Structures are given as C-alpha cells and as structure tokens.
Image (cartoon, rainbow over all chains, first blue to last red; front, side):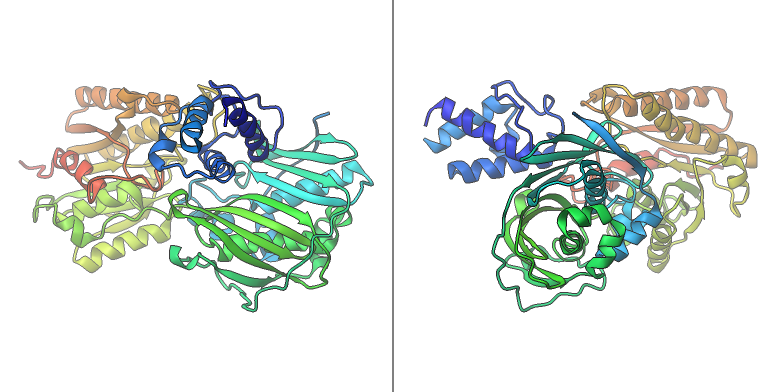
Length: 80
Length: 475
C-alpha cells in the first residue's frame, strides 16, 4: 500500500463520515479545519479506518493523532 | 442553492407531543431538571423530531420528487429546547437532495436522500417484543447481541398528521418507523444514557406491520459506541449511537467522613450555593461530616437538593435546603432564610462547555460574569448586611486562569475577575475573608467521565480550602 492509496481511502472515509465530498485531504488537515469534527466524528473516522484497512488502533495511538498526516502514518505502519 | 426553507423554536410542549408520538420519553428530552445533568445542560430536541420537521419542510418546498431510495442522517450537535433553528435546503438534483438544520450558525443535522428504486428485503423480526415503560438503563454486558421487536407508539396516521409533507414524500409508515427508531435508542438501546449519532437507511419493502426489528451489531465499549441493524416500517439499515456518561455521583457521607476530623466544622452554618450536585454537594457533605450545618441551595434541582440533605441526615448530620436563583435579585431571597450563615461556599455555575463559534463570545462572558462575579458579590453583600456577623467565603476559581487550554477564554476571564473581586473585598470589608481556590478539573456533570487517579478527587481538592475558612467566629 502506498501513501496515495491511504489518502485516497481517507478521502472516501471523510466523505462518508461528514457526508460532504468537498474535504481535500492533506497531511496538515486537523479538527480545527472541518466543521463538526468533534470527538464523536473522530471515533467514526477511526472505526471506518479500522474496517477499511483491517487494523486495530490502540487508544494511545488514537490520542497521539494531531492531524491526517499522523493518521496516514499509523495506517501505513500497521497495514504494512 | 443553500436556502432557508423553515425556521422554528422547539418548545417543551412540542417535546411532549413528539415524545407521545414516538414513544421516546428519555428524560434528556422531556425533563428539564434531569437534562441539566447531561452534556447538553438542558432539555434536548429529539434528533428525529428535528429530522422530521426538516424533511417535512423540504418535502413542502421541493414539491413532487422521485421515490426516496435511501436516507442518511448525521446528528451533528444538540439543539436545546428554546433555541432558534433553521432548516436549509442545501442541494437538490434528480439524483439526491441534501438538507441541514442549523442552530446559531452551526450544523445540527445533515440529511441526504437519494432518489431511485430500492426495495431492500425485510428479514423476519426477532421474537422478543420490547415495550418499554420507562427508559432502560442497560448494563454494558447486556448490549452485546441484544435484539428485539418494538412497536410504533402511535399509528402511522398520527405521524402523518404531524408531518404531512414528509408522509407524502416517504409514506406514513416510514415516518412512523423513524419515530420507532428514536424510541429504540432513547428507551431501550443504549436507553437512558444514550446519544443518537447517525441513521443510514435504504428504502425497504413495506411489510404493512406497525413495528420495527433491531439487533446490536457492534459494541465498542472503549469508544462508548453501539451500532444496531434495524429493519421494518419500510426501511432497512443501521443506527449508530453512543453511550452517554452517567451523571457524576459524589461520594457517600461515610466515605467523605473518613477524610474529615470529627467536629472540625462544628458551629458553622454554611450557605452552600449550588450544593445540590457536583462540587457543591461534595462541599456540603464535607461540612456536615465535620459537624457543621450546610444550607444547600438549588436553582431548579429541588429533588437533587432533597437527595443530598436526606443523605446527610440519614448519616446523622444536619442540613437544610432552600431555593436560590442567581438570575433573580439575591437579597430578598437571602432574607427568607431561617438561619444566619457565617460561611458562604459559592458553586453556582451555568453550563461551562457548550456551543461556541469563535475565540471570544461577549454573551458567554456576560453569562459567566453574572454567575462568577455579580452573583458572588451579591451573596456576600446580602449576608454581610443581613447579620453584621463575620463571614468567610470560598470562591472556587480554576487552574484555567493560569493554564489556559483552548476554548475557555470567557470562563478564565470571569474566574480571574472573581479572584480580583475576592482580593478587593478582603481589603475593603471588615469581618469578611474570602478564600479563592484554583481548583483543577474535577469529575462533575460539567466534566462527565473525567478520569482521576484519586479515589475521591473532589473531596481531596476541596477540603484544604474549606479548612481555610473561619469555623470558629469567636476564636
């Protein structure tokens, strides 16, 4: 799996979770940039990531995520 | 094309009507006193009520549309009773329609309907019929594999009468089924302590039955998340929900008494403003455990105040209760008191979290100043003028005055102002001594589910400051 694959999958996940297709994926994207990105939506993103990539994220890993770039890194490590 | 198609304010009467229609009587929606102990701090409009109102407005505005093949809904944030909301038609073409409900500029609900043909097959419903009388408080272990069949609380015609345009768009039974979904979430699973987050439904065959089936498909306790499959009433799909943290319970008297020296607060008559729950409840119990007599005040939570005084008296302590509202002039309310306090512990607070759209909100600052500065000042002044006796007062400030995490600007400003007021009153008022306590975040209804290493963090945080008050006015 390549980084572009991960970003492309994340783009679909964000569209589904936020029900919007206009969120452009970039590593710096974080909760301050997207209206409604609260702790619940964060969990929905994580649940969708786990299902999509067949991985399981630990609470510690989730708490350490500051932006989409961090999430993509964890996915690339775990799904490798 | 984003346009406002309807506006309204949901009232308590609207809530009662929708609760009767749907069968979702969760106290979060219909009991303002119980609801103040939830994360929303006030009674919350049923998400599905908001949805059906929005769909009704959409159907009216959009005219004739094709068959609805699917419906997806995000309940993005709470709408509380009394808040003005707007229904917006955001996009509409041959393939789909997108609508939102906005509250004070924030999206509260997003709904997307796709048009086309869908006749998702409807599986047989579970044998176990569940007719909830009150909201069930399920223990976590019972959620796994929970399944049942739940009837409509009222016939589809009743739903169609309240939401006629939505019924024309979706069919009366599908409207009624949406009501049954909120009944499942609010009354059964997760039940009493629930939040409804998401609906994802395909239009299914109409099975001509006035009930729906549900089965829990995923429970993730670490995220407090529960997902159910639902089917029936012309729908087939899933509901995503969360288990809300239970209201925070303060320790019982017998636990608190272990921290307090016998008789250390004897002779004290302490007015504990906002003592019916949270830190005020803990403070009242600490004082009673040390032989003092707390007078617990409540604004709306009389039942909570009675519970606290009952607990204290059952333990063998003394406690009275009285109503005191920071929103009304304080002095006449204090004059009605039978006893004369020589201590004031001031825990009155509005909801601290809540909706904010920018860095600074003048209205929020005003609200916090009214509670944390004017209210405190008026209580001190009223007590001093009433008795001419010495008075010592605990002012609960916050570590946020120094630490300043994001989102607490107005709160920290008002607490800093309260500290300055304490300082100046200590200089200016004879026989008065205020202790301002920079308390950490503690587990209360304002911080539900906050974890702590200490066994009774509120007690260990408050006790040293309560001891700094004057407990022997003669000494």
